Amino acid sequence: MITIDHDRCNLCKECIEICHEYCMSIENQLLSIDFKYCSTCCQCIAICQEQALSWEKVVPAKFDKINYPGPIQINELLRERRTIRDFTNVKIDRALLEQIVNNAKYAPTHNFNFKAIIIDEPEVIENIDEAIYRFTKRLYRFVYKLKIIHQFVKITAPKFEFEYLKAKPKLEKSIQRGRAFKTLPAAIILIVGEKSVPFSLESAQYGLYNIDLYAQSLGLGCRNLVGNQMILNRSRRIRKLLRLSKQEKIFGTIAIGHPAVRFRNKVNGKQMIIQWN
Image (cartoon, rainbow, N blue to C red; front, side, top):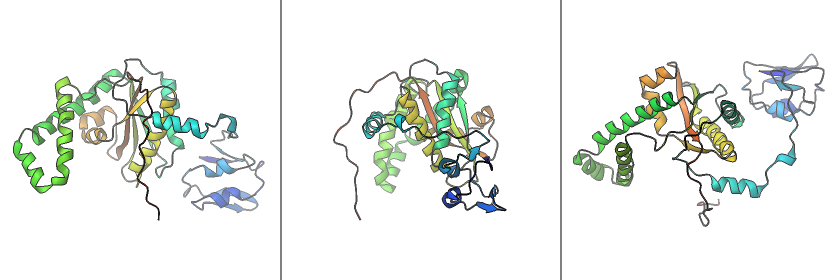
């Protein structure tokens, strides 16, 4: 909750002007917040020149622009980012995992009540791998074993045929090695929230990207498990293992660990398709 130090507040109204929930006002010469409508975006804390606003009375700190990366450093980091599918067996300290995950709180969001589940116990990670693997085998038997399915896709959804054929060797490789992951990550991080909150899926992806980039800056690698979270949400066994309530849903899933591969080259020449209006 946002707290106010009335002794510091000079009633400049900057926080009131920036509040997009319009829940701040001055009453009886004191700054007031209607917490019923406050989304805890904390823009008011970030802009206050007197540091009169804080989170749970923890005084904010001024930005130190000396620590800012320049555009060259940011460009280098973004171009180095690649999905990691092969990890070493080196564990990550829990204090460091907490530090990495807490960066998700600084991402743009519509759901301010997300929680993170950090899974670093090998046995639980094995259970998740097994659940995804079992789904993979069932999917392969249903979609690829019968040739009539391919013919059906070819006739009824020809534009989808490429994706259909593209997925086949991936599933076959997983079945061949007997597990979903090529190698198990050191941790799996889940972003969990209530099903009823709108735009939670989009909000979770912003949080995951903060996690991804910060982990990368520490020399770690990540893999965003977008498709697999659907499997985990539907698995009663996994939901029970993670102690998820009926109202909760996994909106973001990312695997993290020490990469077993290191990319050496920046890919030059790729350009975004841009339309000017």
